[in-house]
Length: 218
Image (cartoon, rainbow, N blue to C red; front, side, top):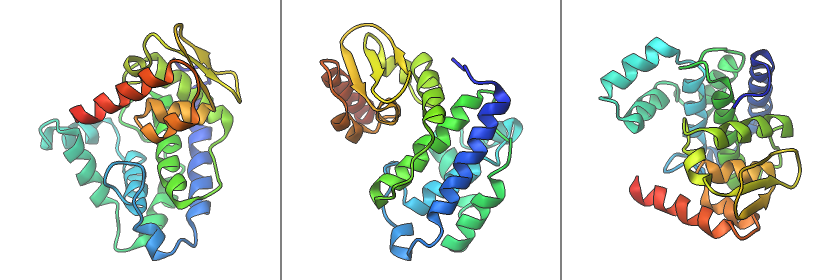
């Protein structure tokens, strides 16, 4: 589900990338190498992944996936390494240079807004950074994630649950309730189990179990 016009979503993507880049200026080498919330990747590697996402169009994505024999993890690892650069300063410079790109593997624009919302939070949270994506951006991503299984299996993860944001208009589904900030709901749909601690309601246990099952299967 996409409720914002495509041009507005691209504007939001560009804004979220620029804000994140500004916030990462001045990180120490220890911060750049700190673990993120995204699997085994460091802060610097997640940023390089965002650059790759902003630089890979449909045909290049298809070629890369074919080269990786449709192993998405291998594809992501190769493209991330391609954009890592020689050091943290170059990693950040490459991300800034790609910030206004409108390149994406598909026309699911809200999914690519989700990339920067989720991975930006993957970076900010462990570093204790105080920045956050705009509520309008996060709400658009929440609606997209809950409506389908695409970049994340959001629809499957939240099936039979009533998700309700406490800080915005996002409200979807029926069943046992799960309440919390829009960002916490988005991060839970993206498989970040730590954010279940920020959610309340009788549906949280089910959501947490489903996220755990996803990780055991990966």
